[in-house]
Image (cartoon, rainbow, N blue to C red; front, side, top):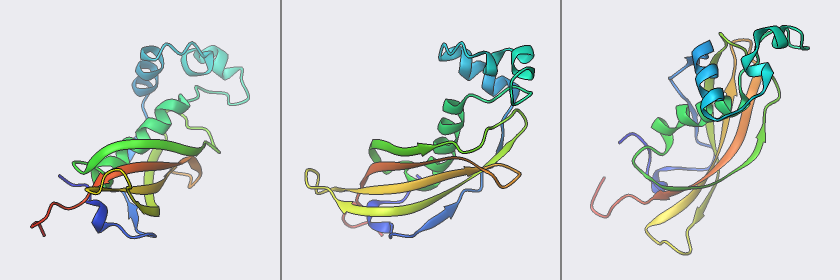
Length: 153
């Protein structure tokens, strides 16, 4: 287990995740076709070349999923009860094939769980940045995390 217990977080905690990921054509093609997204900007090189981007645009839902996935190992792996929601998702710059993304996470809020005394609620702000230092994706993720079991640590 690598994630932290609810009790181990403080508002303002910041993690720069060690994993960086270069997005490949295969990533984009497989994700786009598996989710039945017919958008030519993601699948058709000639259509994408004729667009304002001039090249294939990586599927934004893939970008979002990759950003959250990169964050899991350091934040909620093994301590998560449930993701309660995602909010304020923005994608201010496009992602292209070959872009390398790095992700940071910051704890925005901590709340006690009224329905589960053995858990608490953490709101993370996740942000993905490309090699040109452009923010390509940001969201808030609200997660229900277990408290450290009694007698541990």
